[in-house]
Image (cartoon, rainbow, N blue to C red; front, side, top):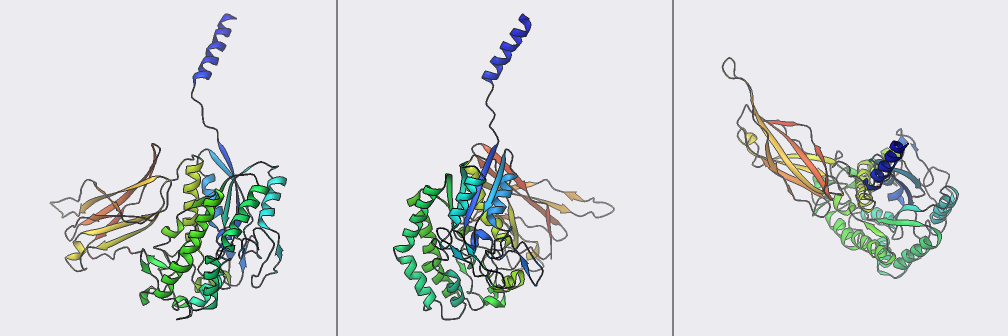
Length: 450
């Protein structure tokens, strides 16, 4: 009896002094907003004739960045997610989020949608039984400035700055009604919803192929023939007068209403605009939209790869705010370049290896590892493989664009250079790493250019 009592006492003591184990988190995420939130341009499926949507009148898709983000967060250790999506293409602040919205998609039975804020409130009351929403995600404002009409007019050469739609957009951006609408939205959220965090997302800037390299500045950068009407002057005008000021207004609204302004897409789309090759393009061109959904409404909207990048920004913010484990870094592309003009000797000269890594909640570092393989020369010399040599890579990206580069030393003809890259994300003493598969370069090889 005394032995059992002693055991119980010791057990109680050990439990009292044992470190607490963090409980698993269940995050409830609700999405409201416009076509960026809904996934316009990326139907659930398509067959070249018709497209399938989660909501046809709203062109709401399973292939949107917010659902991608929720699914990827759900795959992290110690966390599950519940995702509810009320977003609708064409939504504005007053006509869509705060008030009803008459949808206007081609070839569908359009309908009058109830206010998204009310749909979210009904979900919270009837499904969540008034439990708090952990994250309310918002994307809104682009339709308030009628950006779709702006893009249409700017596809006509010489028509961008002078078109009536552009002038209307400028009047909205420079007026007082636009910020007041955001503040009405803030008041409605406080009145109708119980929310822990409100995220409002930055809009991508889809008109560059590299930082400072505007689409339209090089005829070879058209993307496809459907976009040749866009010029570098038009795109610079859009950045300076519409896209940049719009993101500024969104950020200011976030500050006034104690929302979190989720940054990233403006930077991370900089190397993936509509004029880039299809393998790395984050944006639907007109041809892409016609092929994927049978209409033009997906033009200039992010494609699936763009929505994965959009998800990166949401995951980075959520991971920091809720102290979640980090994903491994996401390697987006690799570029191999000669340091001198190609030729019999230059092919064996130094190369520059660049890797692009997705937005990440940790501090990123990258190391280029390389070795040289010298072939066998029978019967006297066997094949040799040198040890791996590490070279720290420099980040040349701006803002949240991660572009790591380092030089791969030259090698003599007949040898093969092998390399891989180790990317590490570190935060609060924890780290996660991703190592790329081994790639090889021999003299005369076509280099990887994506």
